[in-house]
Length: 87
Image (tube, rainbow, N blue to C red):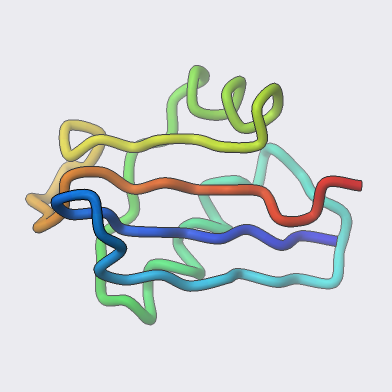
């Protein structure tokens, strides 16, 4: 099961958040698709997902995206993606 919490942080406060849930096994190859699905309702762009983001998510159950990871400009300090399904 896929259950990730996407939080947009500005000045140490959550300004927007959403939980993406899918009833399918988690697939690291689809990580960017999960982000796109969660960020679309928030009207935010999808970041460029690098190998280090996937490694951090796999090892620590979290990934942090800075504004420099986005092609478009964003109005938050960073995006925090957390795995809520740690089975």
